Image (tube, rainbow, N blue to C red):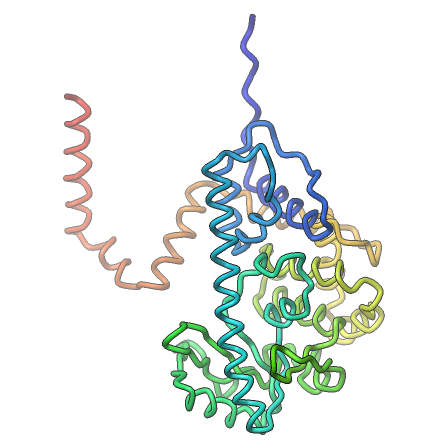
Length: 360
């Protein structure tokens, strides 16, 4: 008998599409999506990790019998650890909010923190948080930062930013827990203030009792606008043809949770008034195509998907160089060490030694 040909290797784009489909289905409680018979688990987990959605993948694959034991144990561990991390972050946030409330301050919780508190996810551990973002009137922002510092927080500035012109103050980090809180005076970068302003959010903010603290949440409509503007415009993903899986997951979860409560006419009017209609249309089309969100408008997704795929399906050399660039940006001394002649001599010496060992 002739041996059957092995299944074709999944491309990076195929892997990412599967990742998005699994997460999108899990937001609806659907776990029926079939997996390829010869799944490359390493590639799937690498894609999820690179895009900061491993906990979401872990939730989406819970209870799957086809998972290898090692993969199941790893994903269960990730979900457990992120649930514990989120619990820690919200405990620290509650302490800060009590101090704010005592001083008469009632901030608006933004982005991932707001959406977890609002229970838009079937499991709050799905969402990985980087920090906690709070929006306050500009007149109250400095006082809020001083309150955090009185609690032991320390400034953690990014030397590449000018905070006098930025939409949030210098981040404040709790040295004990490692939790960082950003006090925002505007929800998005200055270039995009006209799409969504702090005044807009304050006007429709929803009061919420979080633990024993008073806090506000942006309206569902404003959270949709904020998610798209932050990802596609502020972070530049639309112009750079990048797919931010975590932010699209957030958009899909918002659409799944709120449905007709989202005022799509108002969303469209905001983007249209700022000449960004194409960004909105492409975002909704991509969310529908990759995450299975309801089609609120009949926007075609094919062109945008092709652009995303062309960026993603790059050569292994470019993929490797992207990682090296990220490492060098964090530790510039690495570049010197890599390029230094002595480093190359050491590398060549090690290669010769390995080759001699292979020749017995």
